[in-house]
Length: 125
Image (tube, rainbow, N blue to C red; front, top):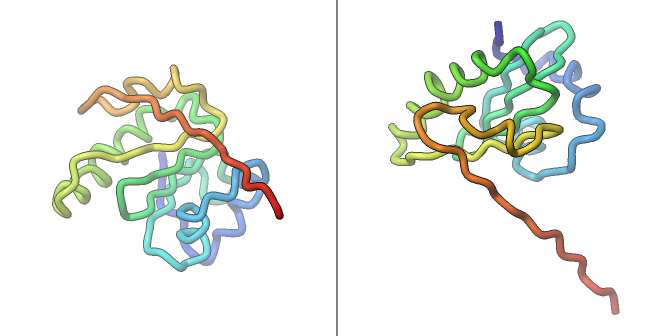
């Protein structure tokens, strides 16, 4: 059963975050610079976290095998209704260590789409 992680216990997420790319939106929530919510499978020793930015972005960190129903429940019962109330009709979930094929159908209200990203490196000098 997922529960919301209290701000005072955010240090328990550190083992999950070591290999997560430094995404500004994600870290703004973690650092308390942006309102958001953090849901974990085990508050004392999380192995999976769903971090919602309060906007159309959420991050799924860890291996959610066996937790798909709980993730779907949070998205469908908490995140999507809050976004709809704010005038938005979608959420983008960035999975960490989860192949895109496994993301398909994670949320039953709408088909999942793939987002391709390209990293650009700036030349110095």
